[in-house]
Image (cartoon, rainbow, N blue to C red):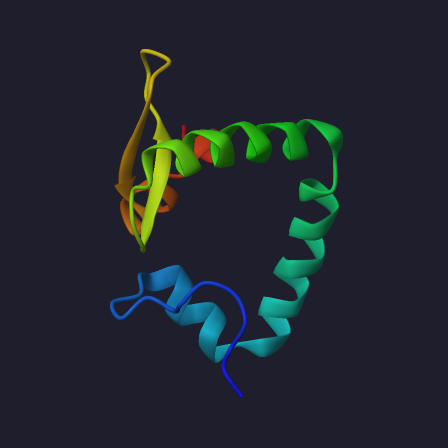
Length: 89
């Protein structure tokens, strides 16, 4: 049976490699992410990005990335998520 969801990256970063080899840590992370992502604000955020993504059709392994000037552009999934987003200091 095929794995549901997005394809795994052929060249994972350090975080992805860690969670692939530590199932208990992965379950804990998924539980926390579920609490965060199940809010109205997050649903609205994803809905807006998916609308843009459907319109531009950026391709596989690509995220729509928010820029400092307020625009949104296609960018590598690994680069976009590795930057840290709101957790960046």
